[in-house]
Image 1 (tube, helix red, strand yellow):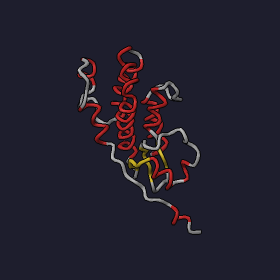
Image 2 (cartoon, one colour):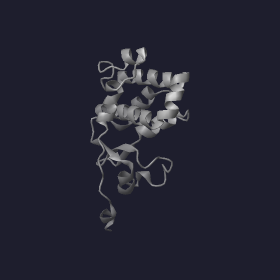
Image 3 (cartoon, rainbow, N blue to C red):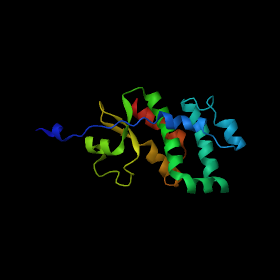
Image 4 (spheres, rainbow, N blue to C red):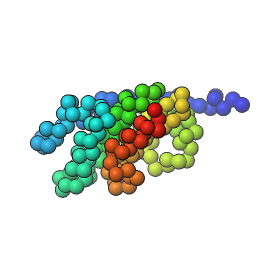
Amino acid sequence: MFGFLNRTKLIKDDLKGMAKLMYQDVSNDSWDQENLTKRNLDFTIESIRYIDMYANRLMNSEIGNELLNKHFDNFVVRIGAYIGEVIKNNIKQDFYWYEFGSVYNHSSKLDGVYSSIQTQQSVLYSKNRDTVLLPLFEVVQFLEGNSTYTNFLTYVEEMIRLNS
């Protein structure tokens, strides 16, 4: 009857700054310098094509694999934050970044379903719709070769379609 009393406060976690690092903090690699620019990464659905190319370069080159092994968590947060911002901007609903643990304790949508998610990951959550999106988790799955999506563009388009 008073279940609302057990709910915990949601803790916001703004990842927009992390998403911007995709073009603000670019390696010296010539491909990265030419393609990971503010003009190309403009938070549109089409810009995800650059993220897909970048992820494929990371996963399919010796240097990229070495970087992924050394800095996996950084790549997950940057790529996931960028993808999440694109989804958020195109859904135009009340989705905001929150700490996973606070959403886990606030919403029954995550009850026992995502036990493999690291609790420090952020999620996109709509309080009004009680809907959770997991772009960082999807990036982990993709970079580890376990994604059900062939690329990030397919994931982004589906999330926008399902939640608009």
